[in-house]
Image (cartoon, rainbow, N blue to C red):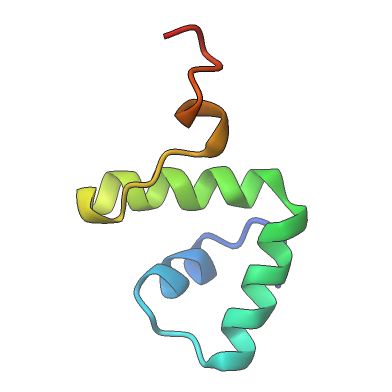
Length: 64
């Protein structure tokens, strides 16, 4: 996957990728903090049902 490819991330969320495409994106997400944050933001903005806070927010790291 080309780093930080917005369209591919949206296609992943919309379940429009074939198995090879999903594997490629998921492997990329393991190593790219930018794309992980983008997936988080896209899913949060598009569908509250997909909202899953990233681990750093889930444990009150931000001082909440």
